[in-house]
Image 1 (cartoon, rainbow, N blue to C red):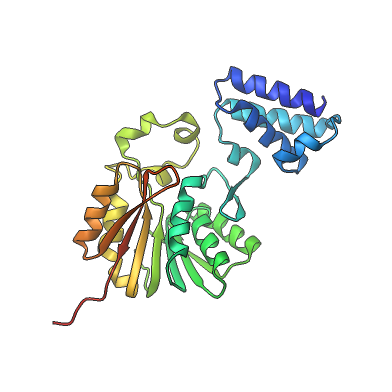
Image 2: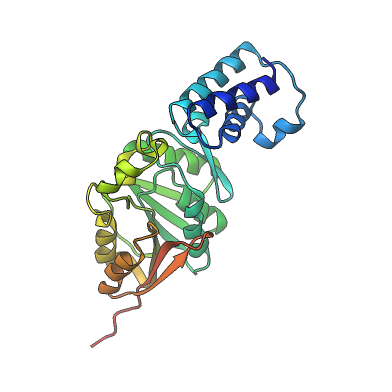
Length: 278
């Protein structure tokens, strides 16, 4: 099988399976097998695949036809400025989450806490972009933490990780708290694409309730972990802005809702000013 044959056959099989972006996904899988970037396929000689390469490509296409996410198949996702290992134990970092990273880097801080860190993509991106800063990432999943630790070692940042249920057992002070918590309501899970619903860890997607559980915990516990003038940045679903903003406002913070590149509500910024002396 030549490269061009693999591209054509892989894309055709994925289209038949109802996969959107079939050609793109086939190219990503083929490029990973060949250990190159997808764009290089266009300038690579139309050589024959080895038996091992063909077998791995066919296995990857079969997995994608079953709606397994490409990031899980190839084992990584590019996010912000780095490549992160992704497994079935972690949420696949998404481009819209980069709005949170951008908002965080617009603020002054040296100590950051990332709640529900998953792959560590948010925390590691922040620390790599700000030399001299330190950070702690927490997650209830030890399997996810192992992935995050590996990403931090490979990228080379000063990050610590610990198993925790949100803020339980976490002490500050931190200048900034960030989080992309599970915000999909239980009743919305059935509406998700099978790529997400059937393959990504449900604990990273939904709280099994109204989608606001984590925000309530963070809003009520943030001030005790923040240095004076510290802030919280949380990712939200595009319809949750008002509800999440109200939770942080009730906790005594000044709140702004920030959009992603598509103009949808994506991040809530909560500034916790020092409590005035009475």
